[in-house]
Image (cartoon, rainbow, N blue to C red):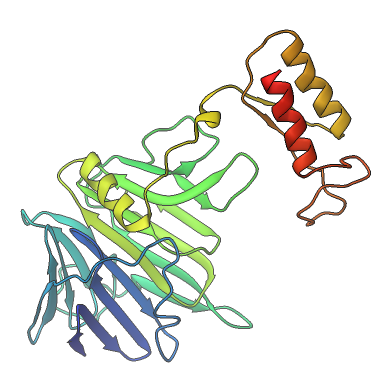
Length: 308
């Protein structure tokens, strides 16, 4: 079943409900679930509330179409979703291999779903989202910070999880003229294969991603910043020299180093007190046995040392 509701195109079939809605300039947010109703429909995750959008929505016997500026998505009455730009270029196409649509050139008996919700024991799903790899020469950039020497991510298999020295930011910019945000905080995996691009969440009850069309990377990143939040200006003290080591164990040690910098007339703007300064793992406070004055007194002393 295809129908529209406000600025949203909705597809429902069997246990699945899918929403496609305008979310920012030239952008769409796609959500789907197989629970009885869309979980936490007001949940934003990485996105922000945007001004009301007025997309063009058309529904026929065979498909639904939603257009928002430079981006257009179509979903067939069999549930296959495709995303285009305003020039008619196909940006994303779901990787679907089944017999639901016998007229689809990619109709197949192997029964691979584009949106696979595999139940986990105890609740939630192992979610896999699959897209066709439309261009073997496509270049993909972004996804955060990984310990690897590759700028172009095409062909890579990435863990989506935070670790020491690894920061996953699941936003990718494609040379084909689109940006893609996997808007799901679950631990998972992203694979940019030559045949299939896939995103996985190991435990979730919802598919949620955002896609934008743009003429160049700068435009795509600008649209991304509009819907996720713009970075504030760094305070002046943060633009100078940061001193850090592994690690300062006591307040006395820290103040000794700060005084030595001052004595040698070496400019310093910030000293980082690294980890294990807390009493117990998980405490958000200083161990007063080693940091007797972790509040204003310590800060005032550091400021006095800096001013000299």
